Every structure is written in structure tokens, then in C-alpha cells.
Length: 207
Length: 159
Image 1 (spheres, helix red, strand yellow):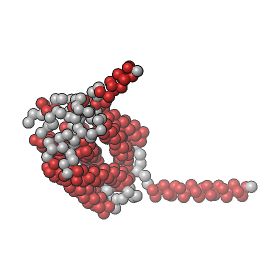
Image 2 (image 1 turned 180 degrees about the vertical axis):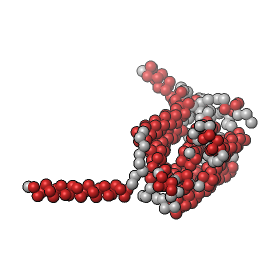
Image 3 (image 1 turned 135 degrees about the horizontal axis):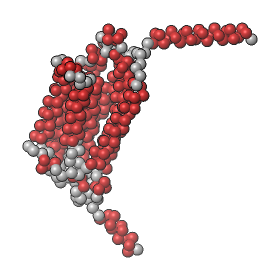
Image 4 (image 1 turned 90 degrees about the horizontal axis):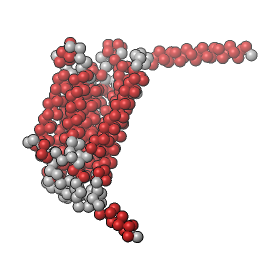
């Protein structure tokens, strides 16, 4: 009996070590982000597999290849906007870590605003592509490009909702130096969305 | 500005704080100091410079220069993208200072994604494919249907 009691005490009192000491919410988010790598990897693989079909002589003659359709300077601005949003996100977390709730809320709002700006730019890009006559149904490029960038845009949209949902609690002082796991996990997701755009921007637009 | 002192401590969560991170209070137990806002801004400007470099490398005259020396344009662009990827993951996602277990999840996902990319690339692009010609495909289908119909009629007549 004494042994059992001692074991129970050992279980409850000992300090967590190794993997036990990690925050399970953060660990869960990283596991999710790992699976997201595979998800976007599959979409990028699809684009690569279909890429040779997007540069046929007929399409090049009609100026309907990705190089001629996509507006790289405009997308460069979108990449800049998303990069700025990553900065504002990390500044929001930094403010929360110092219990500066107003600054934290402001930077969260700025991040959400920049995310909306990015989505607006993406909508303009999609409309321009549709005006070129390219849709999901009628071309390999349309299918591959719109599916990949569309799913990325959906992730940005989810991120905006998440950011906006954090703001009321941040304003009430719910996040402070002792508890900032909420914006930290939200930030991980947001930075991942930015990292995915880094890859998409290079592979789809520049190469 | 040098963040080394702030970021030297790895696995800040392993610090056995009061109650621990699984204590159910929703509190962070990190006691290590965090990088400063100035450090994050510095990282931003480096990332911005790399992004501008990417856009310039992809345009003339740099495009021609790389082609001239026999280097595919994908090589410098992928290197620059990898630099941005690593910087965001290390500094903005705090992988440099966090537990390596978090990095393991990301690396595992990246390995799986890269494996899939190369597998599908090998499977589908090992041989050059002709662009899909929908009109020719429909004509072929109609022709096949006609042939089948004729043979079926012939077969039926034979019996």
C-alpha cells in the first residue's frame, strides 16, 4: 500500500520532463501544420505534373501560358502584404507577452486587415484570369492554379476569422505575460500560411 | 539587437514551472526572455530584401545571365525561397528557441510532401506527354463507337 501511495505521489508531484513538458495545444498545432505540409504538397505536386501541359505550342501562340497570364508585379505586392502581416502577427504576440493588451489587439487587427487586403488582391487576380477565359472547367492551368491558390486563400480566410475571434479576449486582457498560448497558436497558423505563399509564389509565379 | 542571448535557451517549455504547461490553467510557463520587436523588424527587412531579389532574379536581365551560365533559373529562386522559409520558421514561428519536437513535426511533413512531389513527378513526367486534345478525343470516341456499332450489327446479322 505504501508503495502504491508513493508511486501516486511520484506521478502527481514530479516535474514534467522531455515531451511531457511540452504544451499539448502547441504540439497539436505543429502536428496539424505537418499534415498541412502534405496537403499543400499534394496540390503543388498536381501543379507540377500538369505543368508540361500548360506550355503547348498552341497555348503559347495564343499567349495563354502561365507566364503571360499571371501578373508577377501585382503578385509581388500580395507577397509583400502577407509578409507585412507576418510581422504584425509576431508584434502582436510580442505585445501579449509583455501584457500590452491594446498594442496586442491593434497588431492582431492589423494582421486581420492585411489578410483581408491579400484576399481582395487574390479576388482581383481570379477575376482577371476569368476575363482571359480561364476557369476551373476549361483548362489544365485553370484547374491546377485556381485549386492551389484557392485553397491557400481559404486558409487565409480561416486565419482572419481566428484572428478576429482573438481580439475581444485580447481587449479584455485575457492574454498577458502569463497566458498567451491563444495568439501564439493562431500566430503559428498564420505564419504557416505565409510560408506556404513563399513556396507558391516561387514555384507557380516565378519559375 | 543581437538576439543570441534571448534565443540561446532551447526548449523553454521544459522549464518546470509551477503546475507545468499541462496543469490545466491555460498558462504559459516560459520564463525565458523573448526576442525584441526590433529583432522581428530586422528579420522582416531581410525577408523583404529576399522577396525583392526573387522578383528581380525572375526578370530580365538576370534571367538571361543565369541561362547564359547554364544555371536553371529555378536554382537561385528555390535557394531564395528556402532562405525565406527557414527564416520565418526559425524566428517568427520560434522553432529556433522551441523544442525540437515541434521542428520534427514540420520536418516530417516536409519530407512526406517532398517524397510525394518526387514520386508523382517521376510517375507522370518521366515521359513527355502531348497536351490533351479534347476534340480529337471525342472524334476518336465517336469513331470507336461507330466501329463497335458496325461490328455489332455485322455480328448480329451473322447470327
